Each structure stands twice: as C-alpha cells, then as structure tokens.
Length: 107
Image (cartoon, rainbow, N blue to C red; front, side):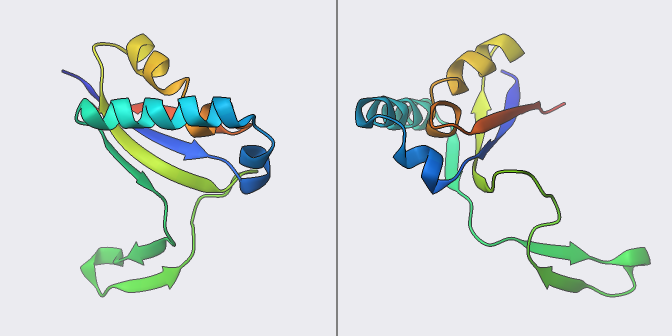
C-alpha cells in the first residue's frame, strides 16, 4: 500500500481556541492512525546536517524550513490513494486546530 509523509503545523494558540470536543475527536483520530500502523510523533528541536562533498559533517541547531506556523509533528501513514490519505489526516489536531497538514506521497 502507498505510504505518505504528513507534516503538521500548528501553535498552542490555535490549539487552545479550538473547542475541547473537537480536540478530543482529533486526538482520537491520531490514535486510530496509530492503531492502523502509522508512525506519529510530535516534533522536537531539529538539527541541520551537512556534509558537502563528503568532506566533513557539520551540524547546526534549528530548522532549515520556515513557515508561518511551527512544525508540530510528523506521521508516516498508509493509504490506497492521495484522496484517502487526505481524508485520514483531515481530522487530526493540526488540521482542526487552526493549523495545516501537508501530505507528501512517497515514491
């Protein structure tokens, strides 16, 4: 079955202004995804890794990407199609709590 990477963006303010019942349903959807075998995690502090021309590894703390909202978490899910993947993540916390979820097909 095809796999998809999802990236959830959201902040505490958006989460806090989302009704409690909506948040609880969103967390239940995350739990369903996990029960289906999805790998779901909250984002920690990123580290950039570079090794130009295999000449030596350098690291730098912090995100390389930037967006209006911080990265909140990632998931690897399976779905029969992009449409099914979208349906699976449309009710997760970042999608319903004034954030956004990107869905990236893995090829």
